[in-house]
Image (tube, rainbow over all chains, first blue to last red; front, side):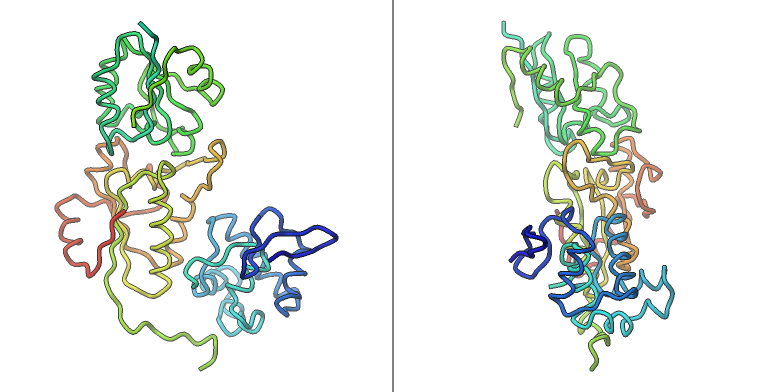
Length: 110
Length: 103
Length: 129
């Protein structure tokens, strides 16, 4: 599949994860989020930006349990818990937020 | 006699490519360590003695980008080994009559 | 059950992953790292061992920019987040390469072959690559 933005086509795999990490932009993230029925408010952006930083540092998209733990460590327990993250990303915080962040599918998800 | 460039791309701890090359390379030849072969350039490794022994009659080179990739920029290399980049690799191939890859 | 509630694993086995290859020259090291992270995400009892050229995977200061490959050495630093805490490096393999624990990107337990032999004998599954 592919995302169309301003007349440019961005290639994605069959599940909607961007093929080229460097093609990502905020605008493209908004488009992918629309596709996922996610409203990109400040809280959602915070998680997406957190994931992009995590990938930058560790070269990996974390599994959901690892994401929850890492968010707890850096943003505190009121955000680093499954309920909060699932409310932002109902179909799986790691899977959906990674997709919006332009990262590969999390390692440890099948 | 043709001037030969020997290419080693396997770790000396994993395969015996480097040992065989050191045993069979004629005096005056060059040896270029690339990919996992660059571990053979570490001076504190147990493989260093065999390389040093032939430092007199062979010329040794190691590919810099492969050294950096493996985190060996901070690790002492055997005295007398020349570090080359990709351009230097091409020059070496051009300067020698024969390039032999030890697989 | 709500989607955020996690079910625990039905069976927990002791999995040991034995890394014996240098990074980048072959795909073994990267593939094994991914398998380790997947196993850890399933709440299994995972230990990771580095012997022979496998110890080179953990060498500090890797910079792959010039060879155009992903520097996955940073991912070993995420093992802690995945609760993989049993990381063993064979002493003999380090010494053979003139390396020490200070040369490695993460804290590890350096063990002599004699002790590693016993740790290996306690595993349910051993996967070597």
